[in-house]
Amino acid sequence: MENKGSDVLVYPITVLIVDDHPLIRSAISQALSPQPEIKLVATAQNYAEAKEQVTHLLPDIIWLDMHIAPGDSIAEIRFLNKLSPSSRIIVLADREDEQEAFAAIMMGAQGYRSKQDVDAEEMMIMIQAICRGELVLRPVLLMGLVGRLRSAAMPLWGSESGLGYRALQPSASLNGLTQLTAREREILQLMSQGYRDRDIAKGLCISEKTVQKHVQSILSKLGAQNRTEAAYLIHQRVG
Image (cartoon, rainbow, N blue to C red):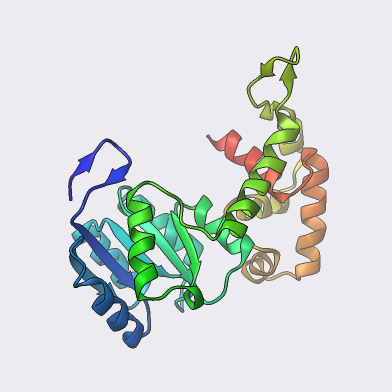
């Protein structure tokens, strides 16, 4: 593959299909292989094989099943993105989940769709869209994502003399961050990585209700209106 500019992929392209169902891998491979834009279709049945293939092939497109056991799909997206920053990742879920979609995009995926909505013709449409540098999400999820970002940014984004805007000011979170307990910092870090309350509870071996209490305390100490704003603030501090 060659690049024209820094963001847009140029055909022909290499696709890596990561799915734990052999029939699905075969069906997707058979649908994509005859396409003139596709140079090579490789497959992996789990995340371990995916890492090996990504390291070897540096594929242009990674067609990734969101729920392969065992494994943490959100963490895997981030890891694969680090292995091959030039690869575009399309995530396929059993059913759409806005929180999951947001987490996948935040970790570096360029697309998120339900398997139920994707047929053979739609596959190439999605790949072509990503090759044009577009984000592949259903409009309702895209609007939800924009809404989350807007709710996080607007409280920190003020007008200047009514004529324009000044830069985001995350410094208000400094004192709040120092007030967090070790457990709260741990939970905030997981929140910023897109994990849901039930996932955090499972990983930390505590109840979901306890996680929710910690989340409310975190929001209060940071002066954040919601989880997305809290995640934004911690990303600003890390960055």
